Image (cartoon, rainbow, N blue to C red; front, side):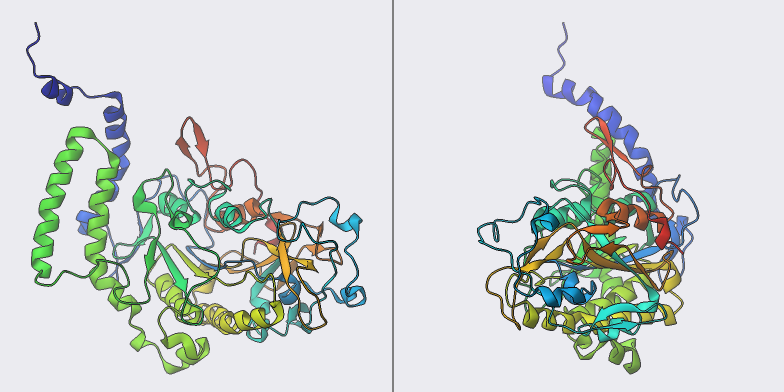
Length: 491
């Protein structure tokens, strides 16, 4: 008769979950070793290195870009008032959108009760800029000045028609929450280029001292079913850039180091017992936080930037948390080898009073966006840094609410909208795709958001069909089950 105590017996029996957990931890152990013993990996004095972690088989081919800066305009900026010039609409003022154009497309509950859908032409002037004569609105004078560095894609489209599903969709490849975000996929696949900073950093921009607009949930930069070590780290504009990064009062750096060493021993002991890879993630995150105590304050101290550089980004660059400050910070993160930097700015959800609100928003983002591209270019970094700009969907040609010659609002429009890309691997100075006279339907070269993400991964040397993770019995990827690289916009 077995007299072994049941609890002891359970501890001795290695379950199937523990076995596979320990097996899966092999790769993670190497990544952990790079954090605990950085001398094992060649690196530069500033912490940058070729790579730590990632999958051995990546990149699949020679990359053009090493890193990405994604400028996300949350709330959906109006392509009609910024990029997609439709002069014929001036003759359609206050006329109804033809049924043949709408063609039964579903609309939001915000305008579904309207008796009519009156055309609202843009009140803003457009001019041609650059060697290829790209049409750009008067709202974007600084961006217009560097349009030859951009690939303007006018035919991006999505199935999602409301904000949260649409943002979740373009960030994770699914309208349903729970999938890894783009930055998490890149951290998982390509690893980190700096031992002292996260591979994936998120910056939130204030507008008039606050955030406002549609809520942005942490799952948008989460790791989903990947290890939590791959999730984005949000930097704060007030107080410590990262919560709890500073040592508590009375705790010295030497004491913190001793505490982490002992904690790592206990965690390692527990890992040896159960083989849970998340324990390794926990150890790695503690070590990263310790290193960030030095690297983050240096990162956010812009006193070493020249006045010429600061002037280029605009007067708000010295105010932490502003979009200008975050664009400069994004360049500093790129310099230090951060793989994916996401800069969010909200308050683009302009269902009413659009002319006034979009003028304010463009006044906030225009100069810093142009400065970021110019700054990267003059430092020789644009050729291997991919910059992406845009929102989750576009805006309708018809007005939501009351319409006058000088004021109107626009509802959500997923069928076509504009994004631009610049830098690593992207062909500069082009406008890609065409829409109909109403900026309602794509007439030439549609680009689904999966195509956009596939192209972004391609620039980084990643075949989007081969970067997968098996979860719940099937292989998942950022582009879900379809998507094509847009080869015409590649350099």
